Image (tube, rainbow, N blue to C red; front, side, top):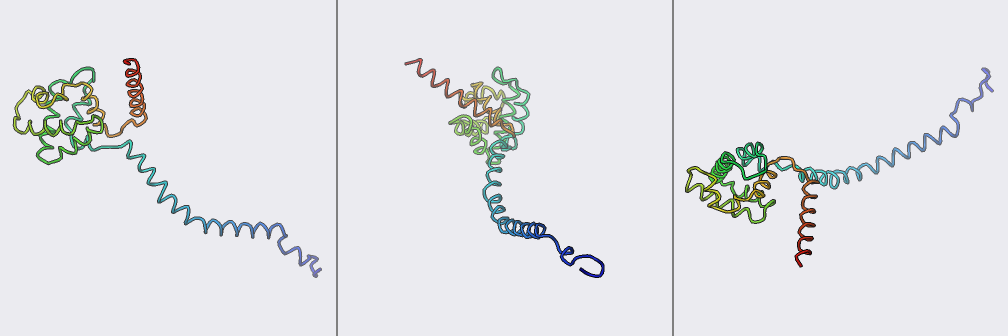
Length: 188
């Protein structure tokens, strides 16, 4: 003992405290060594998959390429063929796209929804460029019969939404496939 009555051993930390400090240092070193690998995985795997999932639901191309049709279709109830103002808006957008050479992009986007629609849209845009007078409904239906289908207009309206209902679209596709399978089975 010292002259103050305190043991020199009492001033030193206990064995348990020293073990905790050493264990904490080892854990910190392990974290420092693993951090680059975790960062690599997040940057090269998790982030691209997250971006891919976001891009699956977000597609502003059609609303950017056909703003008049997008606005007109937002007011359409979807029960019957659209009225002449919707046809006129789509015709104006197709004429504008024909001039700016982006009609193929509109056709490509609609082709995701309706197979074969790209050629119908390009043909219609060419016809509208040659015959720019109203009524557009008759001119567009005359250029391609796709424009006389309410289902085609529903698909076009769905394509004009910037944010898509991915789950609802998947359910609709699966339902359509089941109905098609059931119809084929009952026809046999």
